[in-house]
Length: 389
Image (cartoon, rainbow, N blue to C red; front, side):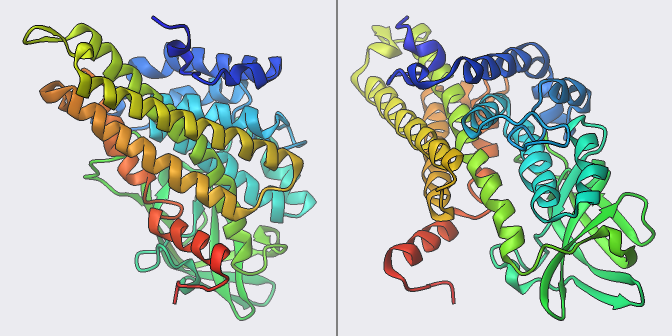
């Protein structure tokens, strides 16, 4: 086998990685292979998340990996991206769990919380002792978070929250929820701890995608919170959207991992499966599909690497993240579909990981900004004209 196939590194990007970045990637890859992969199909089948993996994920510094201080690892953004890539090479649900914990819940506190809130929550979240979720999406407001109906009103020294959030990753297993609500001045955030009177979470069952990820509905019925639970520095829709930018960055890297798994599975299958007079890998149409898959993965890798450089330099723009999320997830989904086709009937059974990744990527292509929403973000950036309304 050609040397680049194991890491799927056709353009030798490893040459650009530091020793620390390689060590981080390889450590997470070993963890995935030894601890996560053996049980992921069972969790996918049972609609459960492997919570037993959380302590080791914390030990590896995965939670809040690219945040500085407060017990976080303080890695650079390329190392963080490589972590997301290796987690999603196993399953999108595993990456999503870490992404929500890190880029949404922890980042919201890190960017908009008081110093007291950061010291209270972030070290325990980095240790995996506190799990978080991010309550933005509502039953009637997905792509348009500005239309949210969840409300917070002031009552003396307290805030009172009412509303419903839906499609919330980690919802019922989270120890705290970052909940976004409308106030008279606009939109702001709150930290709602599990067990707070009036706050409940119920899981959404029957999913055909992201089954190894807990997805919930959050209900807030006259939930009373003190000012210490208010993210007072979160003002306006820009605050939650800045969190989504962090998450989309990780998704762009994660999609490469899912695509890599599907490509490698299809390649091995084509090299071993014989039809008519030769192995599948010897047919022109099969080779073209493999070449197309490799090309798209390589393009996605290059986008990720440059985006990580821009993020570390502090010059990354949200629109650049939109391009990466839009391109990479769509490419990964097409690669998964192509791999499923190449495996024929075997492509729909869990003996092979392809169908699981294909189903998961349908959700990844939708959440945290659909393909079409990313298109409109980029269109606005190019033309100066907003087509959202």
